[in-house]
Length: 157
Image (cartoon, rainbow, N blue to C red; front, side):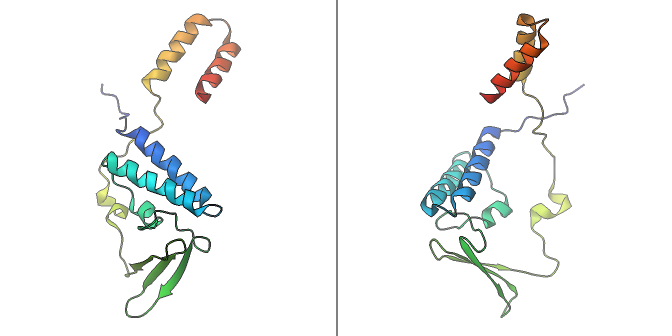
């Protein structure tokens, strides 16, 4: 019987991009230069590993300075009605303008159900942790509390 859990390729790059996005988002209000730096690193990680970023993630980052677009703090959002209905995002760091047209019934390709081919499970335990548990059980067969403490310490690192 085949293993149902598939390991995701480039998981470490996705984790790094997630960390850089969160750091950029947190730094956006206090230090816009640092936020732009973290955003630039995130985009560079995606390009180096030849990975596609999700459209929602792309839309929340300025194309010019790669700083996160937070409405009211680092970006200004205005509704447009003429000639087409849509949104206009203005980055307050570099003053770059992005326009998104809003059409009735329009969905991005990734939001449509036929675009999903397979779903990867990121919660599967890696092989390293199972080997680590087996090794610890050899050293601490009777001391379950001590083994749990060692496991907690190892999870921190």
